[in-house]
Length: 436
Ligand SMILES: NC(=O)c1ccc[n+]([C@@H]2O[C@H](COP(=O)([O-])OP(=O)(O)OC[C@H]3O[C@@H](n4cnc5c(N)ncnc54)[C@H](O)[C@@H]3O)[C@@H](O)[C@H]2O)c1
Ligand SMILES: O=c1ccn([C@@H]2O[C@H](COP(=O)(O)OP(=O)(O)O[C@H]3O[C@H](CO)[C@@H](O)[C@H](O)[C@H]3O)[C@@H](O)[C@H]2O)c(=O)[nH]1
View 1 (tube, rainbow, N blue to C red):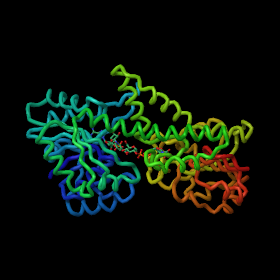
View 2: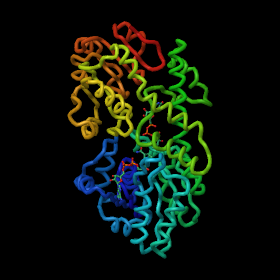
View 3: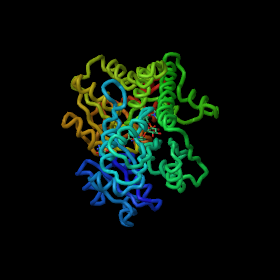
View 4: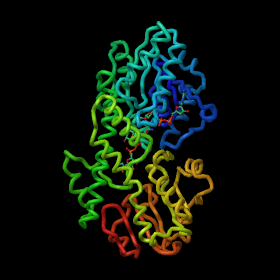
């Protein structure tokens, strides 16, 4: 099939590449000329594991192409995916200007039947809005489909190729047949394509993300309580997670959830509630608790140094909002670093992939070190914000040699308490007793 994807970010580029991988002829459109040039030159503009192999293969096979021209995109695709940003607006709602703007432009450009697919995360009722906007511009026949995306950054290719489910919200038989045909190769494992109405599909996405954010937040509260009463959240987590009704995943406490999705999606669902005369009390709490959790290490660090951080040097390991991505959107590291800089601290930072993005935001206020050990030289403490695998088994002797004092504040609970005690570190983590 001929497919167009409008927007080549984490979702659009993965969607386009994976659809080319199953034999479709895909044209990806982006407004960012530099990005399009890079892709036309065979360069993947984001860090996403395994994407480069598929990207290369499909460009070579002539199934994956790039352009800045929406007109070309509209002419090319039988199915046109909208993978555009839906960032948080000032009032917490999802900003639909990118999606509705593209819908209007498409309406002015179509001249034969198209299926327009909302891949972006959009509030209930958006498919109707997209339909209205396009209808105002054209009399040509078209269908609008809601097809929310559930991929995780860092695992995006695998999640797209082997999805646990595909949710499709639509009301037209013609579009149903096309979407079923498109997704057939991805559900060979027996995982379902779940077809429903547009509104339910739109809400499914927000419900899933908000539930996961709530699960994490619940565990963060349990962790905070563990510290009050002397329990160990790692043990509690294992004790709970083995109950199959609860499940082992997404029970890891830490310095809050971040990223380009959970923070904005929880707020957008909360706002949708308000707009429809429903008060999502649980989400209100989740938002507030997570805001606090992001900076939970700061009072501990300040109290350890008697409130005086001026001139202190901190090594920061992990800047991305999670491992295996270069994405720093709503990363807890940002909030921690901004606070420490305000207090006059010097920060020596390291991340395997996210340093260029952090540099765009922080400029030369940070010392960017391209080696995790070198970042700890003369540091008064090490602060861990992201659980990259390479941080899991460090050479503790090297750390002790490098640092002024062996002190670690760990926002991701990477180390075993007994091990770290034997190594002679002061160690403060989340929901576990302080060592040292
Ligand atoms: N990132 C994720 O893991 C993820 C997962 C599932 C769903 N989503 C949702 O998917 C949507 C896209 O997210 P993302 O992370 O891929 O965004 P992104 O910011 O990484 O990418 C968006 C792309 O759209 C381009 N763009 C903006 N305006 C355009 C226009 N008018 N025409 C063409 N291109 C345009 C930008 O240049 C950019 O390349 C959002 O609604 C998000 O909530 C994201
Ligand atoms: O036990 C856990 C699991 C995750 N997190 C944090 O939660 C955030 C989100 O993590 P994750 O869900 O792995 O990453 P995303 O790439 O943001 O993916 C989420 O957001 C996407 C965008 O909507 C959805 O498509 C995915 O299904 C959903 O998992 C990160 O800050 C993690 O550090 C925890 O603190 N504890």
